[in-house]
Image 1 (spheres, rainbow, N blue to C red):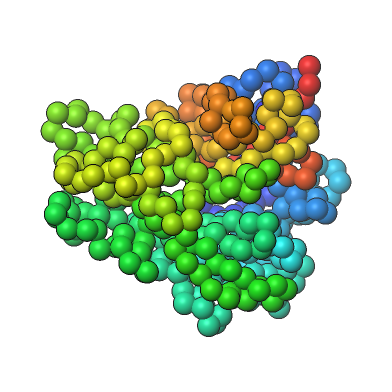
Image 2 (cartoon, rainbow, N blue to C red):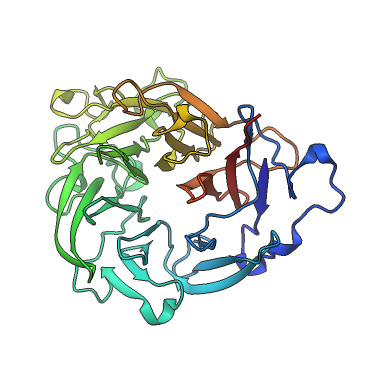
Length: 401
């Protein structure tokens, strides 16, 4: 296991070259780096590393806090000796979150209400609005409880964008229950929240030609991934909270409702806020017929909070892991703070066995709870992730016995 520690409160204090452990015992190290004391299958390591671009560099997004215009983007440049130089690329950003590499080789960054693109070699000069801002394309809603942006490009260069719900379960102000006999206003119509939008782009200009609500009834789609073989879009759904408030016989909501893994299809409605789990009517909508909604492909642990996932296509891991779906569970409850691989079934879908790649990320004194957010595969075949509870950037690699 290797880990790279960052300041959680301010990345301006980042000093990558000074965190190597001098005099560490061999049992506490992995290569040059300090081991992260968590549970993994035999042969896996968690190096203190970084997600490189094709040239070995890594771009890291730091939201810093929930206040507007405090976010930054950093470039970490390797020096060839296990250290990294930190270069500030962009600052004063409004709660930046998702970042992806576009078909044009530029970086696309999600902000509240906007998506921008830039060249890391000259970010200020190349910064351009794609959605919102000065793009002539209407901004993303960016409302309420789930205003952060995440996105993924498909093979055609079209862009899928999460538009999270403004509420938890369509409750009113001060938590008042929604009207059981009326539709949830924020979940309906062309400007609905709790949806995945699809933007058709013209290349090489990255100009939005049109957009649609591709799928609806999805409370918060922060975890998105496209299958490497058939291009299918998969979504990790962050299920609702506070269900026990409407279910008096339920002591708490530690194990209900489940989060979900959904196979996303155009035009499908996945039931939020009317239904939960395998199409069960929410207690606020007891008479709702859930049969018209798309059931999840798989139930995930309750409140696991999947915030990032990627299909593994590399060759560094054992062959069984090829095309598995690797998901970070960000949640602070029992089922969170871990990394899992959902193995492919006989048809290649991520519906096989769940394998815990990183576990016990909350049980070691002085280590701090791990809370994985974005999960990406590097060109070297390793898995890289960031976690925002202690500010770590982590590399997971497999060393064959």
